Image 1 (cartoon, rainbow, N blue to C red):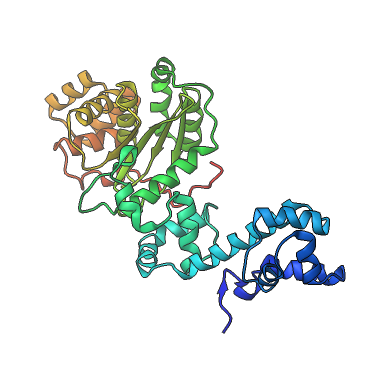
Image 2 (cartoon, rainbow, N blue to C red):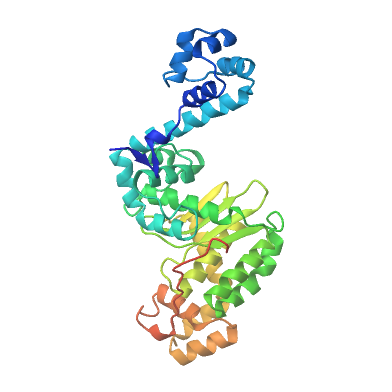
Length: 367
């Protein structure tokens, strides 16, 4: 049976010696005559023509004189052969371990194929090769090691899969790769945009996505909403770029609108507080002083802290009172209900009809 790689049979990988043989026949030149013209042994010519030896750079120069064909032709011919042969061998040496990792990445693979990051027609070993290229690793097996060095240091927790998280973060980087920020990060402009950003909580998810991208770009921030995947329990990622801009990636993991807006302003808090050294990966389970400060910023920016304290002191958490409060503060009711639930003043099932869910099943690459 003929071996194949991505539609290419091994027999179709042509050694440059076969081309040399055809040219000799076309020019009615014997191997012996070529050996004399090129100042090499006849055995050397025979080995090349019979595909037993490569065409070296030195021999390519000699062929240039002997046959009148530029050395670069022979050098490129040999390089292409070497590359195709290496690709063929590589696919046939893919380990079972890497193929198992591919199964972990199944949902992320489907998503990446859907948005055009991966070829939708590849599978098995050839798909492993595509993931290697996308992730800039020579073996998927090395991902956990890479994940724990330098700027790639990732969390270690029971609900974190290092392969999914590493691949997901790479997809996030590619989402913002072609976006243009209008300038370097401008903190003052970001502060001035906060009221406009908060007003978007009244809008639908598509408008929110487009307007957030517009507002953030004016502040030197590239923004994207990316689908969440189990194994990557991340609510937000902020990354510094070489041009002075930032990337801000958000997920809608739990789908509830109040959680999304709290998380968004939490991430903005990190930016305003200067918490990003290189890249900040905001895991849902992380608890420390920096996270608490960002939480406080989000809570107080979304809902006036003085008015909220007065509401709590009143003890009146009836739906009419909540609606009146939200109307006076110009915020959606779901924001206040979510806050009261988190603070233990309401049960999570209370006023469920007032809660809003955002659906974000697909985001197009062109966003």
